[in-house]
Image 1 (cartoon, rainbow, N blue to C red):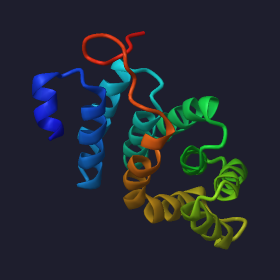
Image 2 (spheres, rainbow, N blue to C red):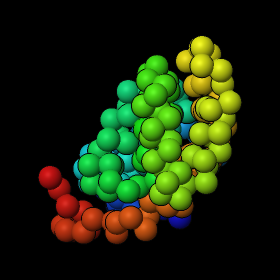
Image 3 (cartoon, rainbow, N blue to C red):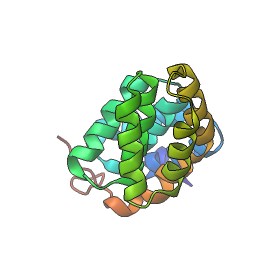
Image 4 (cartoon, rainbow, N blue to C red):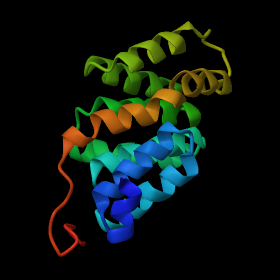
Length: 171
């Protein structure tokens, strides 16, 4: 259905979001990332697409991109547990172990069960463990759940932007 909607209107942000989520769920991360980026070109700052793009970037281990999208979401929604989880995973990937633990704790505090599991995994590593071990454990434990979480939790965060003939706000 999203594909049909995009044939009629290639600027349909909601259809791009739905297609990106479906692509991520099928493991087509690069396509999901491209659709999320296209939607964000049309509706900058739209939280559901930021979280989908972060999920795809996490799968590609593009930690700086994950962190940037998580920061953008957290600037708008300070208590977004999915964004805190992405932040923690990105920080681990960037070698920021203490910060990662703090971000995962914050996500768990906001009720994110996945972050509680990730935090337990991170705490199980010995203090001198290589950051690569932590990243592998975190990303391996979370990668398959990220798109589903982003798609499931994000749409409630904000309705699709509305505005001009395509239903979009251009900025």
